[in-house]
Length: 310
Image (cartoon, rainbow, N blue to C red; front, side, top):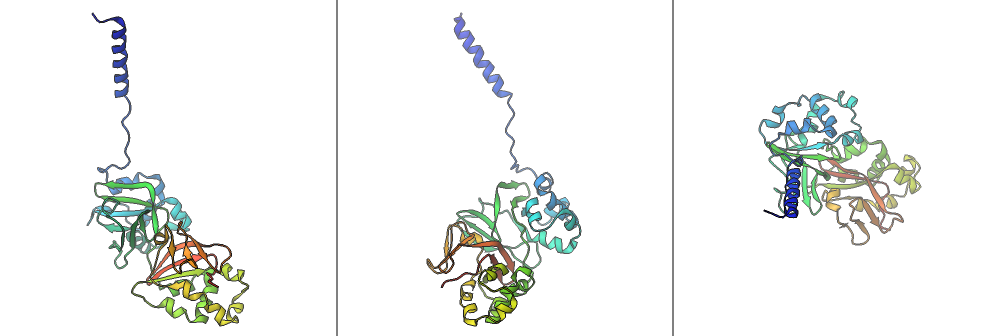
């Protein structure tokens, strides 16, 4: 017979094994057996995305099954709200136009960190009939038109891949100059472009795409231009001086600036965060306040100061 202390030890060991076997199995949200449609319907943070799909006549399994697999870039609710798209405004949106916005974020194939090897920058084929979004991959992750994927919010599924976004990626629909003219916060900048002759450059097509740093009206007011008359009567040389730095090529997204990006050595560079600009003529840092606005011929970064190099 075994000594009593050995019997007790064996009994305790048996109980520990029995208890450990009754614990709940871990729950994995990245279930490769689930479908895109099922997964999207099950996510509370995608309620406005679901509403947009419904308004566009796309809230059904066939949307994600026909001609798939797809990689879907779905903006979360806060992304829609920040873009001014509440449930009420979504339900008033033109369904055909809304369908184009949604299809722009649906790329053919399976795209994830495991399928994109190394650094990557490419215009991708989406379900939009004519426009291609830009996909980047670098040290910092994957970016859709410069918009980062939300961390831990990607799923590889049976019929594709789902990525959640913090901003709504609107398809480019206008020439950069036409877009600038329609923005109430950029009326001073539009007047400067007209006076300096840079309006034609912003409107032109460049094989590499345009990059425009567009100062908001308040940025010009900080320099003493109180109204449009002040812009139209200003010294032309002074207005022209910053334009070479603010209208350039190729098109670049904030994703390209991450880690630091130099335009003119230490005189003009973007800091590692991708949104803060240091320029030798600016006392305080310049900030990108409305990033990665796509146009048919490039991208606009709205900034809170005129970028000055002297």
